[in-house]
Length: 199
Length: 88
Image (cartoon, each protein chain N blue to C red):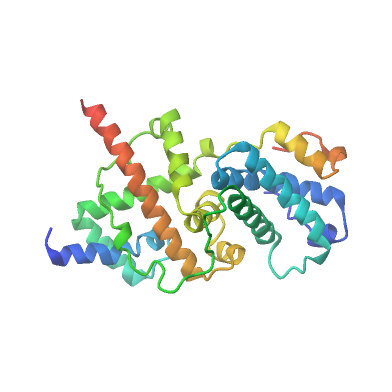
């Protein structure tokens, strides 16, 4: 169990404590950058900008949210800004939209191959891993962020909601959609894999 | 698959995520489990959704920060003096 980060020390400008914060969360922030942007160079930019910004705004951190959600919020903003820079034609809606995801019509499962019993080394073979990464990459940004924070980084529903400034209900809906989307695409791929095994 | 069961599947699909997270009200949980006993398709959807989440949680997915990336980060933050190997 890692010792909890002391907000008092951070705000007081304790460099050793900040270095500890960096070491605890840099892996997660880098991974978030990788999953959002899809390449190591952009992920490193997200990582560096996140901690530079954190350092810059630390003195005004009021402790209304936890350090973790504060840090992830900076990181998601950095990632979204970089995505906008890379693909300016895509507008990103983070705010909940009226009626969004009310219908589950578009996430109705269509592939029912049961690949859940395949061994993990087979599922995460080089090709399998690359399919998984590409599939996560192909999620719309709003769903991808929720999925990364909740299912990859293991934040709670509430922490995810706080980080993204969404309601918990909205997070749950997006999570369901993201999970169904990924399941469907992975199922399409692994169904073929199962077929090949039978041949 | 008749229409009645089909609409039941759709209705329960919305609860699947919460069920996996152990976040579903007991009554709904029971209803879902009862349905799962008799519905192969829904059982497959549940199992493969769970497996999808397990895969992204897998340690193989959680690689450490590359050492050179860490070094450049500490330098950019003027924290070079704390650049001893990260405690694992």
